[in-house]
Length: 256
Image (tube, rainbow, N blue to C red; front, side, top):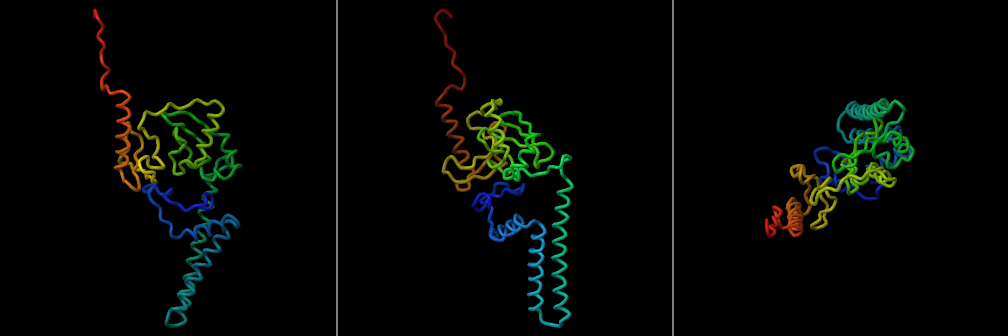
């Protein structure tokens, strides 16, 4: 949200709801926590969240009626919860450092988009090939996820879509004369469309419409899967207009 300057509209995180509408009522807090982490690191983030936990339990203890022992117990519980929360953050950070590449570089695909140094390190191991109608980009074991597929429409199949650094690498690969992937047939979708071709609304990935002949399935967030089939009908109509023959006609010449 900070990098793009807008709120998240679709879910880029989860596997089961990838591309679904993403309500973000807590976005002010999310941005605040990100800015604290960006400016002061994970230690400051732990201190802030631990303080908020303890403060919350402090107000709970003040609101409790009863003995001072009960109030003190609530405050101690808050401190214990905040300590556990901070410990989990540190364990996660240690685990991330322990999974670095043998040459010392470990990064996510998203971090490469905004970290030129990490991107240059990843470029030393990048391998680009063609698989079907896609450009297959292999960042090597130091980047998560390692394998990406970029369509002819400059959209990656990963959760980053058109923002994936693999898209930029494919552009650079083609700029220096790299082999081009074959053009997909009309009506074949390598990845879901970002905008509905019928009404212009946003779309979501629809796995039930996936097909080897049609490609990736999608549905319009406004018109549903009906707009998907409407577009397929338009493609078939255009194809029939160009060639109305189901089977090529046989031309009989005189004397044959």
